[in-house]
Length: 181
Image (cartoon, rainbow, N blue to C red; front, top):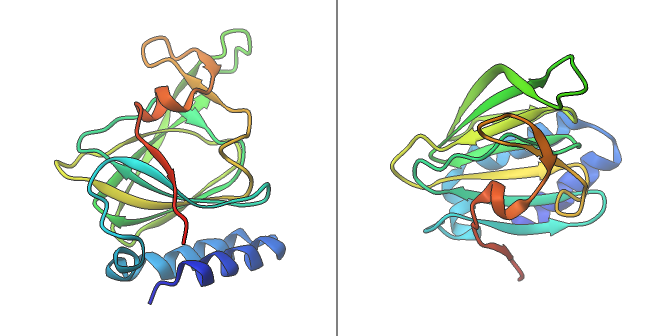
């Protein structure tokens, strides 16, 4: 059974222990029962971001990706744990080119996440996301900092040149809502 308050308390405990492994395990337990998450948080019926928890130390979001949605390459500058509870999320990883003057990136691999899958992204990861399905995909995203206020970067889709992060551009205007109880 997924309980939002207990989930956040468990994550805060893992964060206090500085254990990313524990954070992955907590998210893994949650997404192992997708129906329980849906009962607690509701079935996503449109693309959007819901803020479940936001402090300087921890941000917990649910992201619902629209069918065939693609994000620009972006960074977080903090560790992230992503757990899928609906659909699929394909991550393409990027690495910075060695020429520091260009501020460009190049492809460096990827990982497909399906329901019940969890991944840990390190502080320096640059990635872009695709929902390859014809339906909404949903995931819990956990960050070890305040993702929504942190200075970050994104990369132009055509030139792959770095520029300041703009949430509306990356999420293509998906609504961001704070979920209160």
